[in-house]
Length: 359
Image 1 (cartoon, helix red, strand yellow):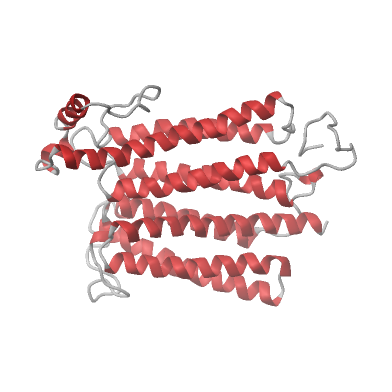
Image 2 (spheres, rainbow, N blue to C red; image 1 turned 30 degrees about the vertical axis):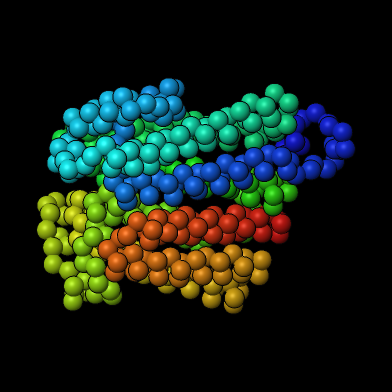
């Protein structure tokens, strides 16, 4: 059996495996926490709080400042770095406490997620509740989670040297890894709930080409959003559908070599982000029409969900741009991106499931 352990347990026969609901509930809780982590990370970035904690203490950093003297020490330490000297030079201790607590909450939530994942993993492993096919995936998630913590600090370090903002490359990598971990875990949950026990994580014969394309493009769109955030590209050309009266703005290819514009030129980054949004909307409509005419009807609900969420997300994106990225709209837009990604993962897994069922 692949869902349960290799030994028989009370009420479980060798012929039929039960869905391990305790494991599903545990992984679902982890998905919810990761979703919250991505949202809090967005708020931390939008409030300019990410560089407020200039020390990295993986084990002891969970204890907050407990005295006025400790707060003053941390504030004095923060004053030695570029963000205070060049951006927040007028900030007082009260203002520092606000941005510090956002970043502190982000780091503590990361540690909570690590414990919520690792401790039950050890328990289920010790109790023999994990199948041979599931164990490697859970170990991979554990390793990716540890890598995410290191990447988070690597990102923060880039803003503590000369320029008072983090590298857009490291920011995007940090965001993409979080989304990848979330998607991987969600996919496992859907496989546990929907797959036949003897076909867990096994691909079926039905084509998953279009769902795979949609999933990949949504991921690329999220990465594009990371570059928008990292270069503050959302604060320019705050008009729609034009960009200050032009469909293609001046300066799209201002940098040399030309390919560098896609990663470092805010004008090009925002322009590409818009183009990706248009492309995804068109493909989502094509996806729905295609399924309505000849595709498996079991995939229609997931296609409807993906199209509906993309329309909502596009509306949020336009509103965020027109209002020049207020914190609450920016956070909603980031959360919306993760919901769209969720729908794309669901459609992809459903396509695999239909393929297995029809074999």
